[in-house]
Amino acid sequence: MAKGWCVWITGLPGSGKSTIARILLKMLQERGIKAQIVSSDALRKLATPKPKYTEEERDIVYGALVYAAKVLTENGVNVIIDATGNKRKYREMARREIEKFMEAYLKCPLETCIERELSRKETHYAPRGIYMKALTGESKTVPGLGAPYEEPKSPEVIINTEEKPPEESAGEILKLILSKFEKM
Image (tube, rainbow, N blue to C red; front, side, top):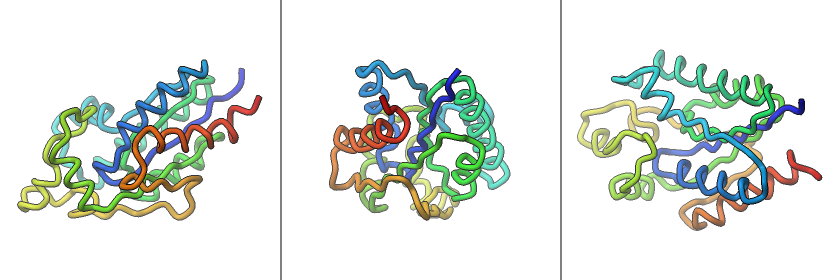
């Protein structure tokens, strides 16, 4: 059985990860390529139903996320990770553990991410109002404000989601997946 591949879509909360992951999944399905989205927000609801977003808690959630993606890819399932992964160490762990791996960084100014997060209707499992909680001092663990977001050092693709619409952004990731993993 051929191993599956994994693309980790990373970026600040509100950069478009969940939206682009879902569009990418649809584009893959239209080409007959099966994939599974593994979302840190969905996993967190199971692993830590009342999250504190501590460093220790993040280590557990991202460790479980990488493990799930690794097991799926080893069993021939293609995986799209939809997760901020605010520390490089989480994404580097995935790169070490998953044979066919690539990182897609959604670069977006913090101000734009805050605006999007405040106005979004669909959260795709993400908690609501995280930036407002950070701005009012209620939370000190929001990536980009209270907690660091470490940009990838050498992702396979960087997409400016302030300038590119979600469909075009997903299409750019799709092109790279097709050239890197889905060669005919």
